[in-house]
Length: 463
Image (cartoon, rainbow, N blue to C red; front, side):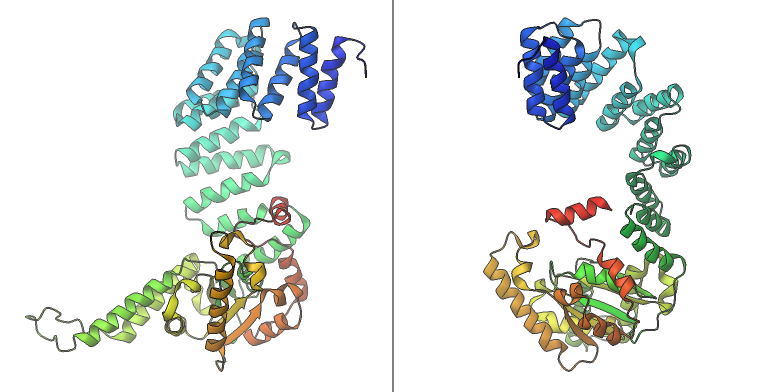
């Protein structure tokens, strides 16, 4: 379409920006500048910003330098160059450009000047300078939340946890209409640093903003605030599996049962206890006659195996229960682990040890269709056929171990998502009440370590 005048090109560029078409916007702004180089500053700024958004930094730099030359009475060129310096992580240059803006155009300063100037200082590690700028901003713009957010983040950077928490509370109290899930996430981090685990958990739940997220939060909140005693057949639950088997989903479902506290992965930490315990037993058996002080292994055989195991049980309880250590007798405690494929020939001995370390334990062997398992990024560095062969062998060992043991249960990921009979049989096995509506709510929440699939990423973002 023939443009009636030069301004039509620039207006068309704005329309393209609004429609999310940066390439077309750039072309329109360029045509406007070609026909009349002395365009208003906003034409240059929009062109430069669109180029930055596409990573065409060198072209954007040229545009903003041109803007500086044609409109020396305006800060726009410096502002664009400061943005480019920030994008390129040239923080000293970025800071220098902001200082130039304040020096040359003091009467045109806007709130975002202060915030971006302070952010550059904070990223460079100049916490005191950033704090001073944010403090000035909160006084000049008391109705703008970003200054208070900046002070909270600066205090976090300096590990002044209580001060950071105080400023986040100011943000929540003074700006309720602007609350975002990330605010709760920042508070969660601070509370964890302060050792306030329960409060951190509550903040994590407040990040769930969708209807299904809120329904899930209600279930977990009730468990955290009014923990019930478990009435299960077992004192412990161990989920035994391999990577990308759906074990996190099973972990989430079982944690919805009253009185159950099922923690996540621990990097096979209890296998280290197993190896130490094994070594102690081997040394004891090897040096039974070392009973006098003049013998090199004197006393090595004196320890009581049951006493050592009892100490290990207390240690294991401390690792899993953490802040709820004193509630051990009321709760069914456990964890899930996926690294059993790394144990090798000692798998069965290790499972026996876990049964002693966690008395009255239910062993739940969780598996999945191996073709689907191999599609996960977890296994991307391994040959597909090797993964299938190795995990098939591991599953056979799971099956052999579970056979004829009344504390073992086998379930597949496909059984779980089908919400069918096998999942209900698992609840019966544990002695738990099967509640379909609660399970449905849990299943609606994404459970994954690092989702690769776009639809799963989308679910996480919606939370």
